[in-house]
Length: 217
Image (cartoon, rainbow, N blue to C red):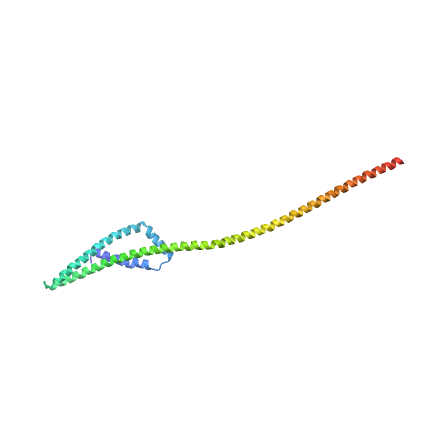
């Protein structure tokens, strides 16, 4: 087998072993997401894809050449009855074998490359849908938890309001007690002033009586 058909065989083995198994393996969602993000954003992978496209163009050319050679060999085999020769017949069968081998090798490589490319596109889309599903799931859970959060906040706010109302009532009671004490103090002050005035009047009266008694003597 020539060098370029050896390269095509290695490419076929790489597609079967590397591409198909990597895409079909049950990988975790996080690892698969990181892998496809790396493959879609890497410049090296983009250049490799471009190089592989050129390689597959040459593979298609070799496939067409192998089919053409196989048809010509088959035509020569159909004419072998007119030229019976054992060495020529063996040579034609050997050429037919090589041409069929090359045709199947290049054909399977092209067919599997289309399958791997399509499978890669499907896996990328499925990964994007899984990411979108995770975002929607988180959004729905956040929306579902929002009413509970509001109810909890309302409950906490209601408890704080009730506590403030109790403190306000207590302060109002203290104000009323202070007003009552102030009124009592005012009344006691007025009573004290009244008693003081009466005492002064009695003292003035007593001093006048004492002077009158002294003058009469």
